[in-house]
Structure formats: structure tokens, C-alpha cells
Image 1 (cartoon, rainbow, N blue to C red):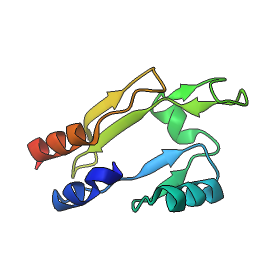
Image 2 (image 1 turned 90 degrees about the vertical axis):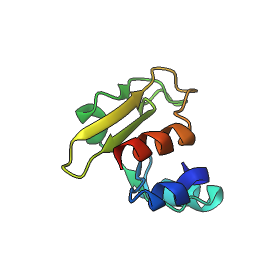
Image 3 (image 1 turned 180 degrees about the vertical axis):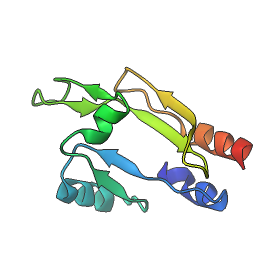
Length: 105
């Protein structure tokens, strides 16, 4: 999403990344990857479970991780669009998110 972050912001939207990593790990990753949007920590998996994204035992150390997903939430707080994938290697393309946001705008 970083590659299209300026376009996303221009559409009056915000990006939030959520992972099961610690805040320190998220901060280190943000700095290394030069990510400008916030990365939030879901260490206890509450967000993962609330959205049905838990992939049990899928991390390299056998722990749980979240399946890749993107949710677009409208001004009323309702999910207006989502993209979920069971394949950990598949991610939604940033241009797809920009196109969906443009339709919502």
C-alpha cells in the first residue's frame, strides 16, 4: 500500500496495517521498509478472530498468523469492500484498493 499511499490519502482515506507482531517488530519493519502508515499490533489475536482471519500454525515457528486481507470501511463505519485470501503469498494490489476507493468517493 505504501506505493500508492499518496493516492489513497488524496481520496480522503487512511491505511492501517495490523499484524500479530509486537509493536517493536512493527516499528522496526516500518523503518526498514519505509512505511509511512501506522502498523498496529494484534498480539492477542482479537482483531484476527473478529474478522475470521486466524491461520492457525502457519507462522515459521508454528504460531498463528492472520490471513492477508484488506477492508475498506466507509464513513459510517461499515465494511464497504473487502478482499480476503487463504494464500499467504497473495496480496491485494494497491491499484485495486485505489480503484475501489475512487468508486466509494
